[in-house]
Length: 223
Image (cartoon, rainbow, N blue to C red; front, side, top):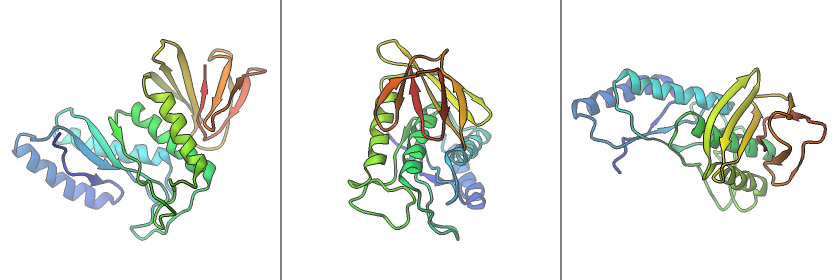
């Protein structure tokens, strides 16, 4: 595939000026590409929701320029990234796992065809807020679990209620399940309409018990 050059959205002025001109040139050439690429890094203190806002800017730019509907590749993503006058923000293991998982779920939700996490390394990378190397077992588990939830499944719909996010999916075997998380803080959820089994990002599954649970930024699966 021939993919258009990637652009970052974090530097909004440069994005608005330079990528606009680039798309103008592609239009003059009758869009000789098979997909568009973006780096959706938010600001160093940004969250997955801020990343969605960055993606919205990117997709709006494509629409304004009359770009054809083609696959979108998010070819770099991390959080807490140093740069543009901001120092690195180091994220703890739990937040790292939660943000990584949210990002892959939201990529499906918001029509990103492929997300490439930046970066797998052999040790800590000094510019990145989220590390992914042999020592980050919690983040690796989050990646594997999210992969098992999404690959082979079809997303049906997502809803927002205050800080609570919910996406309903159908698995390859035809069974339905719901992914729940919050944008920040916690939310009290009645699980009775959703199912009887909770699976955590860290791996274990168990019964819903009383039917009311507290959901935080770490995604949960209920079926």
